Image (cartoon, rainbow, N blue to C red; front, side, top):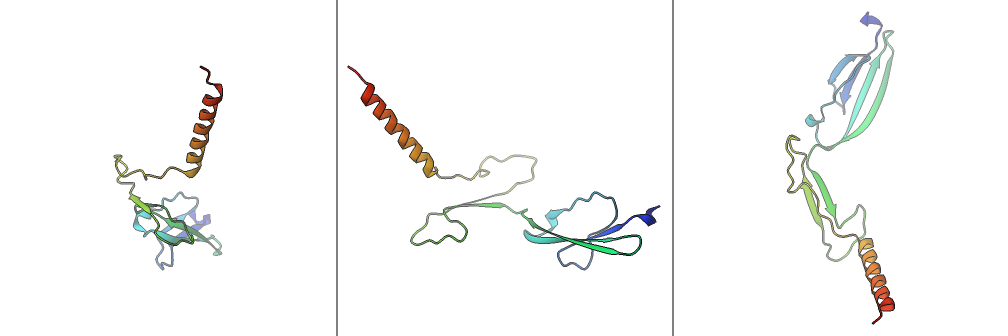
Length: 134
């Protein structure tokens, strides 16, 4: 019965040894905790019962390590002088308990919010001055 089903081989990056040899259809869980952070390639080779092969490569990025948040500098930004930079790193932990301290990255107040606040205070002052009667 299984002679008429396709088989698939799964490879990660340029490994010679496959991580799995399975018969289709199949559901497979890829454990990324054993991979280093960064770019990887999942290569799937299928073999039909008649002996023909098909190959598919899928690029993916692993980010198991602590996430790094950075404020004050953007990718490829042109800068000069002293730049205030805020960096935070936080991990998912064991996902059985939630640690509040250090799990959120503090951010500065956006400039559009300051502009909106100043405009509102200006409008409120104008309204009070023009409509206040003794």
